[in-house]
Length: 165
Image (cartoon, rainbow, N blue to C red; front, side):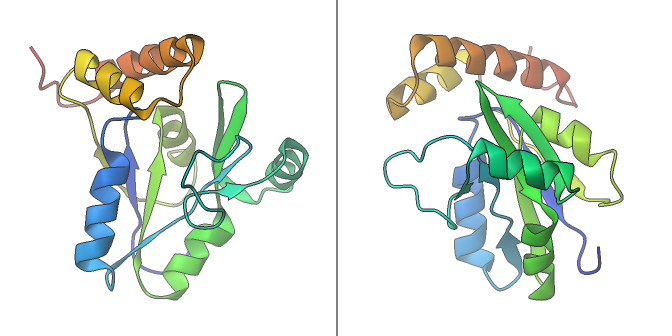
């Protein structure tokens, strides 16, 4: 893909990627652009289609994945998430640095492509702080919270350099 080299923000849900991204776009909106991901999950309160995610059906997303329209995709808690080639190209067409917000599985998938981004791992101070943040959202069941925390532990364990004691 032509255009400036993309930046991939990765880390567990609740680590602060969205907060960092919002600040980046507020301060440097003429330099950076956000690649809006697709998902099959239902919107959370306050989320808008096309701004936060493209909310699509599983059938539509599976069709587009099969057609090769996605740079990366992953399934979490029964929902598909992914970054389309078109979303990245739209940001690059504006001559902005495309920022992608993905989880660890997304990073692994992107590394198999020719995208060649800069990777930034965003991690919470601790698993306890992360759990508190996720609980404060009040969007998770106990089961989905447990899954997110398990995924977060794996993400935190694989992040380098190892900064935690």
